[in-house]
Image (cartoon, rainbow, N blue to C red; front, side):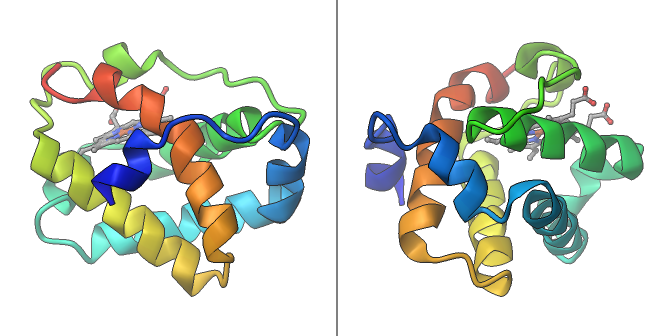
Length: 132
Ligand code: HEM
């Protein structure tokens, strides 16, 4: 998993295709919905979200994934540093959250090759999220 995240950038020229391979807007909305379900079932990660407006989280994360996968959206949420400030997210909890995203992608039948490409475009955000 870590080696995979460290693998970094998506292959040039595949950005537009990743959005389509995720099922476009509808597919991403569904994936984020499933991710929130997985978070709700996870005793380690759920407590972080106790005070969170989940409708907003759903909307903003959908927008962000749409943008980084080459879709037509522009992310309008807070910066990653601001959104995760004072949470003290550890590396272990970050990795656990990535595992929940993988679980959600599995549940949505997203092929592994497509899963890896989404993880690769999200990986650079890690530094802005942990230990803030
Ligand atoms: C690549 C990994 C991650 C991405 C792409 C991501 C993305 C986001 C986005 C887009 C938002 C919404 C910002 C807004 O409302 O404007 C958000 C909020 C939030 N994130 Fe993350 N996040 C990641 C990892 C994590 C991790 C590891 C945790 C905790 C273990 C976490 C906990 C939260 C919480 C609790 C909120 C809601 C904050 C609030 O209630 O205002 N996130 N995240």
